[in-house]
Image (tube, rainbow, N blue to C red; front, side):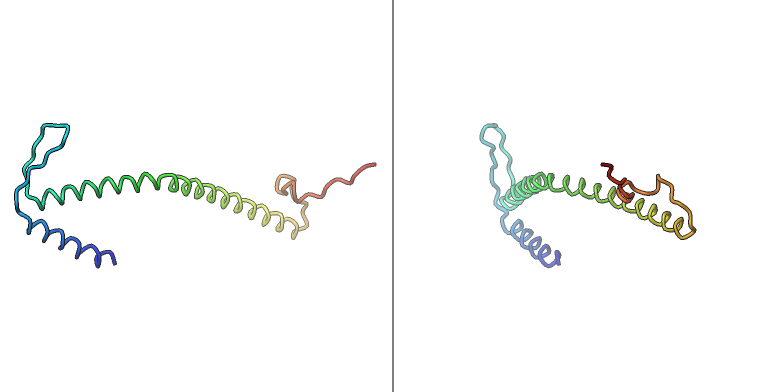
Length: 120
């Protein structure tokens, strides 16, 4: 799909550069530098610089979102590992219960233990 948009644009830019062969002087105001180039090439150079500046602005604007996504992905991996550990513990407790063994206290999470009766 990208080629459908990209190829005609490249052809149009090449035709523009080839059609505008007049020489122009390019000056940068505070400096005393003069460059002579064809009008088509000068325009394409300015467009390329503007594109790169725009790409840099878009890239820098997306940095916070990419950082947040990376943090969330890392947190999701940690949660998946924790969940896998809980599943493994649960499976071990079920096997022990099926064999009639009392599960070790280290395998049973504190939240699954029955609370001690309240004394009055």
